[in-house]
Length: 133
Image (tube, rainbow, N blue to C red):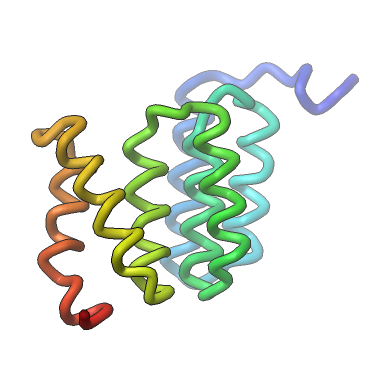
């Protein structure tokens, strides 16, 4: 039996993802990354596990690996504002302010009422603190 043949309910997958995010917040990065990799195997058509993995790498300040995970999320779901806002945040913290601002503005223009747009706006508002012009 292959790992992908395992049947897991949507509720169990949500719990697994939440555990991954909780482990990340506890700075248990290796464990969180494993959770996100495992859930990516179980739900290969979802961008969420790869965004989660990207946030782990972002918190480790491993920006190349974070971008790799966000790129994979966007390959799965190209319209994902969730993946795009995290990708732009990484660019901002890397000092690629212009690139980040462009992405934030596109996210806001796509759906100004989404939670991702509110995050993008908050990061734009904080950009002078994070990455001065």
